[in-house]
Amino acid sequence: MQHNEGIIEEYEITPQTLMVAPLNYGSKIYARIVEMEDEFISPFKPLEIIKRSCEFFGSSYEGRRQGTKQLINITHKAPIAIDPTSSIFFFPTTSPLRLPCIWLSHEHVVAYDRLDSKHTTVTFRNKQSIDLEVSYSSFENQLHRTSFLKTKLIQRIEETKRKSFYLFTDANGAKASELNSKYIPR
Image 1 (tube, rainbow, N blue to C red):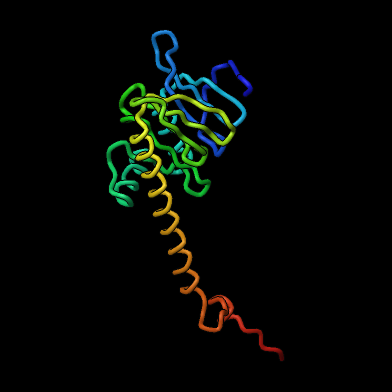
Image 2: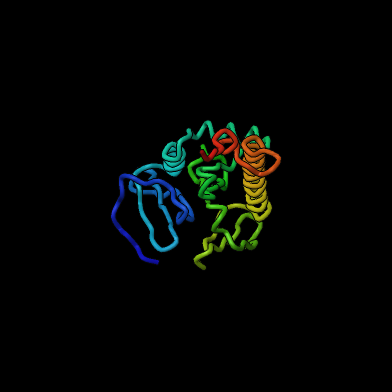
């Protein structure tokens, strides 16, 4: 794991982001951002990074929370589809309003084990592990909620693609745009 000790001002979550965690930096809370092969420190709190990333991908955090509520009826510790087209789904370890909240990428979690009644060890796709102050059952619940959100969203996207395919295709498989432009030789 390469360390980039500098503080970065601008950061949006990418498909390479594993985790955004709080970091005590003097008297302030900064964000420790862990990627597949790098690590950064941002002067923004983790929730601010999540909010800015939602905006970067064309939605507000509140809009994404409303979407989660509408799709899977979860409002507390809601997973967030930061960018569904890139499969960027993050979930919080606790209430996002609490300072110890860590945001994890659903895509990069490959294993998790009970450490004790209040701690879970999470292993990411790059083989890096972290011990989190969250119970095994709570962690597993968050992981399942995020899977459910991802599945529902992908189902909606696929359903919409199917509907538009039938809407713009006739019974013979010709596209609607082709029907009006038959070439008639002279």
